[in-house]
Length: 102
Image 1: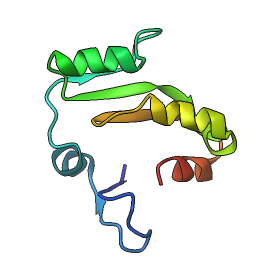
Image 2 (image 1 turned 135 degrees about the vertical axis):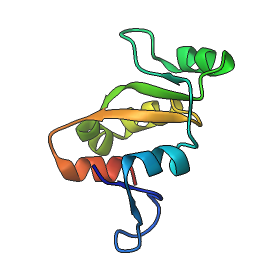
Image 3 (image 1 turned 135 degrees about the horizontal axis):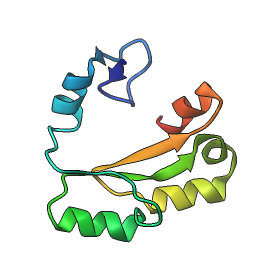
Image 4 (image 1 turned 90 degrees about the vertical axis):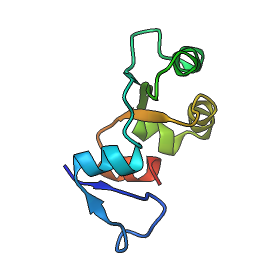
C-alpha cells in the first residue's frame, strides 16, 4: 500500500512512501499504539492513554461519507481529535476518503 508523506501537497508533488517509511518519517516511530475499543475510544480515553505513555492513538470509526456531507458531524469529529491521533474512517466512495484527509 502506498502512503503520502504530506497530505497538504498537491497530488503531483506528493512523495509516495512505503509502510515502514510512513511509520518512521510521518508517524515518528511510535512504540505504544492504542487502537479503538468499543465504547472506550472517545477523546477522554485517548487523552488518558496518551498521558500514560501511548505514542499514537486511533480515533473511533467515522463515516467518510457523512464527514464530507454533514457540517455538524464534521465539527464533532474535528473537536474529538487531537495531535497524535489517527482518524479511522469507513465509506463506499473513494473520493470521500480523499476529501476527509485533505
